[in-house]
Image (cartoon, rainbow, N blue to C red):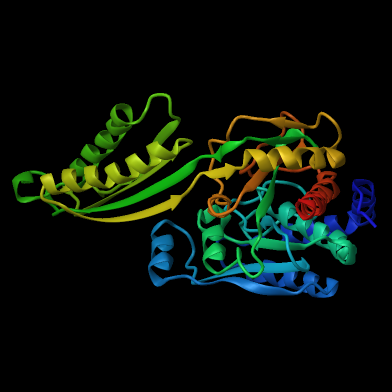
Length: 412
């Protein structure tokens, strides 16, 4: 018997309280980065209760990656506790993804289930994980009628920009191999249940350059005996900003920010070291490729021109791409859950989303689901609160997308 959207909506409503309980539990135990022991343990427990087979996915971080993240200000992370799970069997296969890491933000909300450990799910990843668990409950109950396989991707480390990369490298896209992927993200400033998506480039790439300049310190009255890293840092700062104005297509969206510039302890001391953190975002892949090659060149030339040395750490997160054909296919099935006229094309997000590591390998769709109303505190705010009515809606969207895509793919 064919699975209908009405059946999926009804089942999502029946498990509304369970999805909310899952979300509230995860909300109270926020964890940062790629290693989320409590969060992953809870997800695995729930999958076990449902009889859904899973495997750890992510593995050990390379030593250099661990050290690079420490330099970037993350806690020391030596592994990734992602989870891959499977419902159904055989071809075709679709992947549903939810991230589950938190932010280093102390929550400023008077909720009975607020986090109290100094971190917070102020980007809504707890709700994503809960909605995907809800979809898993729905799909497991229909497993004998699924026309293929649904792979679940519970991902840590989205806020690091590399969590999806680690899971891809550890085989999330193989055995079985999904032919499409779908992800959701809550948006607290949009009305609950409204869906927005962009075709083509969906979110900006992010390239981060952490520059440590090593000069030669000394007394400010004897600059000729020193190599001033603050002066070098200033030269680099100006040069990389000029680079964007002269070598990036003016039609391309490119932003460059030097969010950290530090060094020195007193006015009469030339310090021995200085540090500059450069972040560049763009929606233009060609501009990203060009500037990520040129920025290290500029740094190298300017630092060496002033006889200093340097250490450069680079992070890259690609644009998330949404496949236009897949979006056309899935939008009607999203609207079967959210209602006619509830799905809209929106401009690409200038923020960054590491789902791009998946969508550069297979066709994908990434959508934002309203979880509040205009005027609400935005994502990444310590006061962010979402409307929990979104939870069964999101779970049903995940499930209906999977069921409908499998059915139509099977019929081809």
